[in-house]
Length: 183
Ligand SMILES: Cc1cc2nc3c(=O)[nH]c(=O)nc-3n(C[C@H](O)[C@H](O)[C@H](O)COP(=O)(O)O)c2cc1C
Image (cartoon, rainbow, N blue to C red; front, side):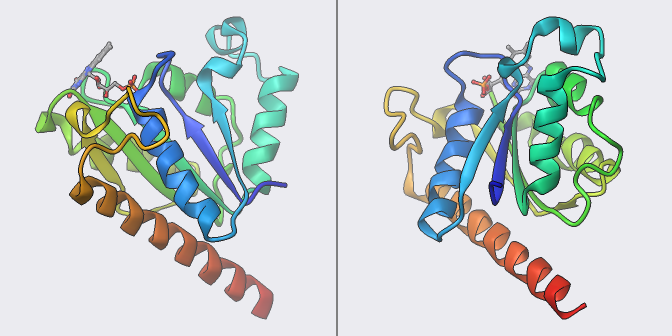
């Protein structure tokens, strides 16, 4: 069972949003959490295109998400929202798949013009799945250096924004589990 799952919603092979999410995942690992990743490209395209609810790969992913303590969801902005393929995957998850889970949303876009996509697109989707969305981080392409995947964040201020939100994810997980232990 993994503590934190990164759900990566970009179809790109060399994905900026995925690099940003992995950077956050690395910070969480340094705090003692186990982290693994599920990417939309892990699945057979037919499973997503034809909404195969019975697909073993989709069921396994959904179960892994259900067992996790927290999530990081990363998506590029496509046409002012998250990617269609991320939505196609999440459409196949149960309607309460994120229940009792703090969720860190991360989006990347070509420009700051769509930074509110986190608030008007991704957070409502997280809420619909009963997750508890944190503030989240929006990054522009120039904030991420794809040539340096081990240390992809191009400037200190952006790195700090990601670290702060990752700390909040870790703290929210601790709070959720401390509350559950008292019940
Ligand atoms: C089909 C498509 C649609 C896009 N639409 C937007 C958009 O509406 N607003 C924006 O700021 N960037 C847009 N972009 C740019 C991407 O969001 C941006 O380059 C992002 O960082 C790519 O992330 P990735 O490398 O994880 O796929 C679009 C890119 C593509 C390929």
